[in-house]
Image (cartoon, rainbow, N blue to C red):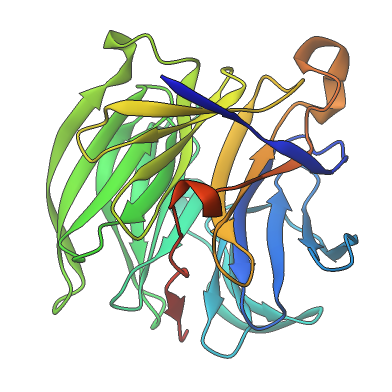
Length: 293
């Protein structure tokens, strides 16, 4: 397998850095540190980063057409937020989620959002679809730890990764109805020699999947059958959580990580933000879909 090395861009002790999204509105990367209830931005031009939000835990978020964010938080709470202000409550709470939170989020081409939940002793992980009118439905129950999601170039499929089951799935997607169906297993990665477990993921313009490997110090590039042929190694950091493309040309892959609260155990750069330039490798990302909640 070919290898590349990621570089450190922000030395920060995030406990669980997640959900990196490039915002074309502010030309910065935004990501969340879930346990601390903080959102951060990184400016690749100045090299500066800052905290833009501090409050309830944000498991994931999406971009709106006006540059605001849809924050998916603890207890099933979903709000529209911009510049320090909560502009709208989409979902006040989901009764079944009183002891858990959303985990990882993606906007669909049809304008809804897909988001997972963290499992508890009493409740398995679930995959939800939330709509702009505040309604929602459970797409999958009995999940482990729902994580990364990505849509294929032709918009006919959504790929979804369960970290606890270490399994990559594929849904059929109907862009006209905004409906997902026919969830099937692509690959059980316990049956491979891939490092760590699959966590967050993204997809480039040519339908190549980039899968963060929790406990594996790496991101793997995989085809739509889940076969990997490129490993991006992340230095001094065991728990790689998520990745996404950004930058003006969308050829930089940004990588978040966890474990900053215990660097002695997880690596001296754990919790940091990393980047690898893939322009010379011929890979280019896609801008995330936006919502209008």
